[in-house]
Image: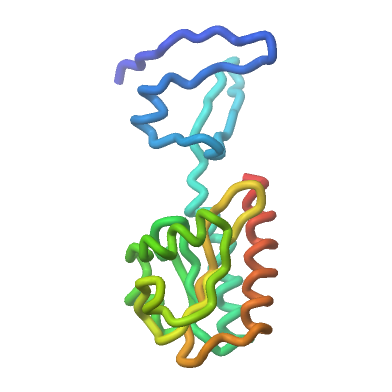
Length: 171
């Protein structure tokens, strides 16, 4: 495999610009985490960090604990689709796209508690969605319930979402 490259100069603050062609090809957006690695032979490698896999690895045990504690179906999603969870809905929801209204709530860092149908969601009559974020938005924790989630359930989801967001910010 032949490697093709573009030469860029370092500016006085030590920054380089990743060419638009590469950003588009690799779906790199503003605020995406990038890992910088130096090799033994002096090369520098920059790679996009797959935050979704980190969200799954950190979110699965949290979903399991919330499921046991709250006795409700819990799903972990990124800003587009369900990634993992705990409860009876995992098999049917994993990999499916979340509604556009839910996506907008997550991007705005807004929590929602109410009828699932109000935001175009399926799975149960009621949901609570709490974003997972710190400086960046990573996704959300979603609680599915046959009854309106309590303020206690929602507060717990919010707290855990912020802790998970702070953890993911380090990647």
